[in-house]
Every structure is written in C-alpha cells, then in structure tokens.
Length: 515
Image 1 (cartoon, one colour):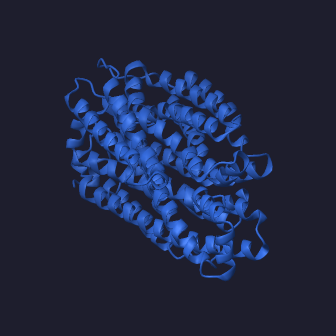
Image 2 (cartoon, one colour):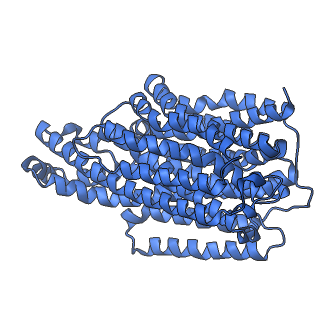
Image 3 (cartoon, helix red, strand yellow):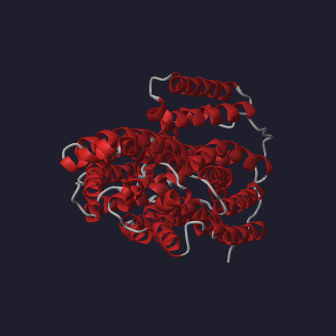
C-alpha cells in the first residue's frame, strides 16, 4: 500500500480514538456523577477541562509541528493522551479526573493540530477530497460508535474502562506514526509565541470559569464581573500580540480572507450548537427518562449512523459543489434538526427526538468534512499547521463556551421551572417545605434522584414529576438557542466562504466555479 494511505490510516486511527473519547464520556457522565459524587458543575468540567486545554494548546501545537516536524509532534501528543487516559481511569475524585482530562486535552491538541496538516501534505488534487471524506467519515464513525460503545462499557465493566481502552490503541498508533508517516515541517524559521499562548489560555479559562460559576456566585458579583473583564482584557492583549508579533501563533492577516472568517465561524457554530448539546441530551435521556448508559447509546444511533454515512459523500461532492454551499447546507440542517427537538414534554418519550437527530446527523455529516478540507485550503501549504490548529481551536472554544453558556442558562432556568411545577401540587409543596435546602442543592447539582431517595413515595413522585416538567421545558429552550447559533454559522459560510479565496493547490478544483 502507498505510504500516503498508511498516513491516512494512522491519522484516522488516532483521531478516532481522540473523538471516541469525547462521545464515550458524554454517555458515561451520569455514572461518573454517581460514582464520584460529582455535582453538575463537576460534570461540566469533565468536558470543559478537556476542551479548554485542547483549545488553549492547539495554536501553539500547530506551530511546534511546523517547527520541529509534524510526525514527531503528533507521536508526542499520542503519548500524552495515552498516559493521561490511564490517570483518568484511576481517578478517585472529580478533581483528579478533571485534572487528568485537562492533560488529555494537551495531548489531544497536539494530535488535532497536526492531523489535518499530515493529510494535506500527503494528498493533492482529487485524492485530497477523498482523503478528507474518509477523515470526515472517521469523525462520523467516532460519533456513531462512541455512545453505543461507551454505554456498553459503562453498563458492563464500568466507566473507568472508557479511558483504559485508549492506552493500547495509543501505543499502537505511536508505533504506526513513527514507522509509516513521512516527516514534514515549515521550512521557515519559527518560534513559540509565549505572550500569545499565555494571554489566550488565560482569557479562555476566565471566560469559561465565569460562565460556570455565574449562577452560584451571582452574575453581578465582583468575582464574575472581574473574570469577564479580565477575559476581555487578555483577549485584547492576545489580538495585539498576534497583530504586532513577528512570528505569531495565529497570523491575524489570514483573516483578511473572508473565507477564513467564514470557515472559523462555521466551525464555532457547529460545535457550540449540536456538539455542546450532547451533554444535555445525555442528561435528558438518562437522568430524566431513566435509561441506562447502553440504552442511551442506542438512542443516539440515529444521529451518529447517519452522519457516518453522509460524511464520505460530502467529501466527494467537493469536486462538484462549492464548499460554501455544502457547509451552509450542513449547518442549516443542524439548525432545523435542533428546532425539531424543541417538542419535548413531561410525558413524551425519547422518540420525539428522532426527527431532529436524523436531520442533525445529515447536517453534521455534510459540514464536517467540508470544514476540515476548507480550513487548510484557504491558506498556503506551509501554513497548514497553523490553519489546522486555528480550525480546531474554534471547534473546541465552541464546545467549551457552548457547554458553559448553555449550562448557565440550564442551571438558572431549571431551578425556577422545577420550583414552579413543584408548587403546583400539594405533595410538591409539602416536599418543598420539608426538604427545601436539600432540593435547592439537588436542582443546582443535578442530583435530584439521589436527593429524593429518602422522601415519602408521594413526595418522590411530585419532585420527580416536577423535575421532568422543568427539564423538558429547559431542554426545549436550549435547543432553540442551538438552532439560532447553527443558523448564524450557515449564513456566515454562504456569505463569506468565497471560492476565489482558496489556494489552488489545496482547495477544491477550479471547476467548482468562482464565487
């Protein structure tokens, strides 16, 4: 087999492991919550600790790949990811798990930042479209098998094994990387942008921390206002450092091309909408409807299987249809799918989600490979590492801020919605009077089922009924927000991703017509 195809296989295996870990974790979150006595905020950090460090290190990792060689840096990232996966599985409390997840994010950043560049340097022309289609199918496959595999592992041998399984896969991927992938680097002399890295990482952390802590600390408290102000100030420092720096980790000049802006907005939008929503859909299916992790995994098959089969088709269509139309159509379908999932009621079953899951699956499968290809096709080949890092940074920032922002809305709204429903029945009013402090804590932490274990049967029924009412109403509102975010991404893709901004050697063929 040609060496370039071995490169594709190796990168896809590593990417599959990386993305599988994200989807697997979503299904395991309720089990992690029970096992480690974790709060709702702890669950947010299981996802956000990973996304934060992934986003913070991506741009720097892309530069390191350009400087020292993408193959070696990719293998190093695999090593960090595998070792931290072992620590995740050994975690004894939420803090240890979240710190290990943050370390996983560092390894994931190194892998993500160099993966697209490795494929881009191995393939050219029409073969590149095919390669990105397979890469997109890998993403779809991870989404497809992740919930089911995660549910099966969690239900049978425990959530810790969703992390332990990464260790042998990671070792095998390291060996393949060192044996079959050709080394490549940017011939220009580069340096690590310390000011940019520190200011961006700190700004992102302060922003997400403020969103997670806002409900508990108070949105007008000095702590939260200070965090938002600090994040804004550091973001300005970052932009100035990148604009004035001689060798920035993110070349702001790249965004003079409208296509680069459009791809970045689209990447952020798909992440902040449907991918951020997976946490709340999982909690709805398991906590609210009472399904086991494996049963929840089965119920995610509509979105995951469809995206898996649509992705390679979208990759091949890049030869015939302009990237902006494919990208815009994919995000529009995600918006429609989210809107279709706004019909949950206190008495509805999970089947009410099926139409939306199917439409979102088509949208994800359409948009993902196009975004992956376009992100490295709108810049010169020697900047592919930076472009890859930029694209994946916007994706992870979208997930991190999406989960934190939606979580802030979720926590605020579910408290008031559940309390309103609770006070509408006599048993509910009695439960609220007898167990006020316990219920307030339970609504904030998401541990309602544990809190009502010692209540009377009538009070249990009243509280759980009110919780289901509040959860369904809140989920509907979150879905409308997700639909709006995806729609903005669709418009940005269609209006900004112009065909003339693509680099001929790496972009879609000229036959796709100028835009």
